[in-house]
Image (cartoon, rainbow over all chains, first blue to last red; front, top):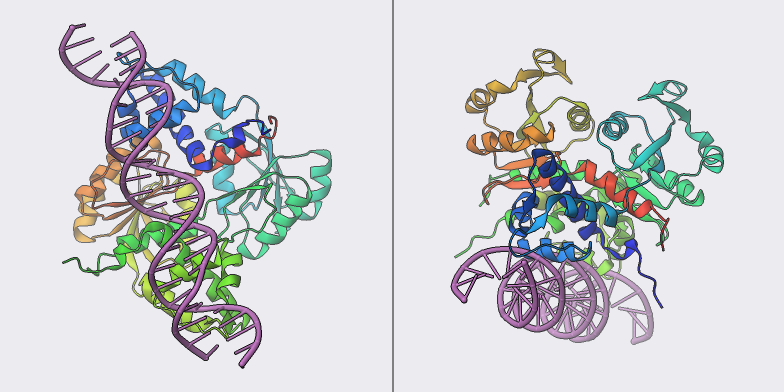
Length: 213
Length: 213
DNA sequence: TAGATTGTTAATCGATTAACAATC
DNA sequence: TAGATTGTTAATCGATTAACAATC
């Protein structure tokens, strides 16, 4: 018998639920009390049908008259996404992207708590970044033994990505946020979220090129 | 009659072709002369079948004996992606992400040439960023009239994203790289590449949370 | 030749859309 | 009530995988 878990929700749906939550929080701030699936759809760039299907997963209860209660739905989505506690996380790479991500974590509140930043560049080691001390990457395993982290963010040069991933997997990290352009090879149990900024830029350029019919 | 164009290749395939090209360039640098679809698949995180199907679109010609010539295939992919010339682009938002992207454009070579950076924060206006002058966002239209850009990169606060997109669309930008967490509403002719770092972080956190079976 | 791989089509899988009874 | 929307299932669409003849 398979036990249902949050993990049973696929990444595409999770991505949309995250978008819905953001929209609902925004609406709540503006004082909107109710909303229809059709309107969520417009704001989320999805179809009303898909929105309703996704919301089934959070055991929503809208009414034909008023649609969904913004507050209730917001809570239901948040509960489904299960982000009550903050997960300990580590960042590998304190370059431009690493720094941007760290600032992101400080301003918005994704449910991650950055425990340490690791760098190869020795001139950065020991300095501070957003109140997190930069450690030498050679101390990664040691650090993770005493401070386990479930999530790791990879923001280092492509050439170092796979080796770093191997070490993270060995240290029981179960979710890797991969901001490098390398497709990591990891065991199936490890989740990898690829965010390939370089590819985004190139794809944007591709479709921006109108020079051919 | 519909004229075939590069645009007919869908975003998923384009994304993989970009990955293949990167892999092939890396292999070429290492001196590898031939490669099989199976090996590309491993490096690209795809199946061999899908790799071959994608490569059909670039009119590849591998042989059963040696697979593909790395150099030939690399050129074929590059030709298909059509990235000979650099497209003029503008960046909106000179915050942490904007800066990281700008450094990316300098180090790697996506086929974009950053023409100008626009900011609302007046204290940044007039200063330099990676050799590009930061302009006041109020001069956007004026600038685009004299220096048309096909591609725009959006890296500003969520609250300003839609209005900025509207202005870009009105100024004939045809590809928007959206690094905000807002789903933009644009005419169908405009391509939008969403890269939602905030969502990536939250999804990574979701799947990192092993606390429930 | 024998064997493995390519190029290409057919089958499958999964995600999205459409449909519609139940509901307020 | 009449009408629009929800929750949910069925149909469709499209992307990936499987299959296989042709090929070297």
